[in-house]
Image (cartoon, rainbow, N blue to C red; front, side, top):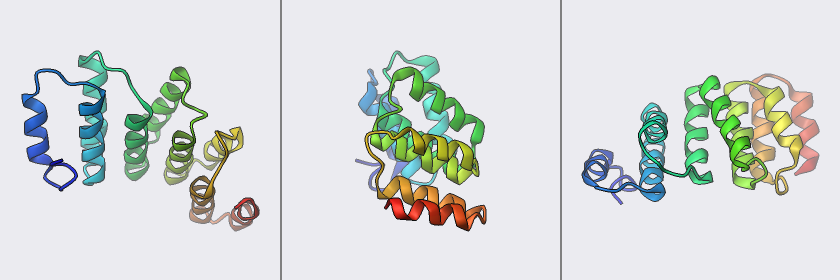
Length: 152
């Protein structure tokens, strides 16, 4: 609740006092940091969780951190998360595919964005198409952006 209200310091305090932290509480913190613009802390929270806790990673956690990677242009971290996505088996989930496409587009790796897009995760949608178009436009590859447009 605190992080949704933009009071991430209080959210962290409550989180720190919890005796048991599960996937839901970790996801709330990781997502809370990302949604409040503290992308670095979002990625650090995921690292801490993986290193110190016995928590199952879920697609919501991954999507929050992929958004943070895109915002920070953190290519290597994003690529690492993509590897985890494949290992866990989430690569065909629509929301994860959208966020992978968006992350790669934001970090400027249009080849990887296009490859993820081409996999055909649970049916592309306007989100994945828009991410790909935005990435091509950012790279000044207008023809490629226009090639994606008819797929909307």
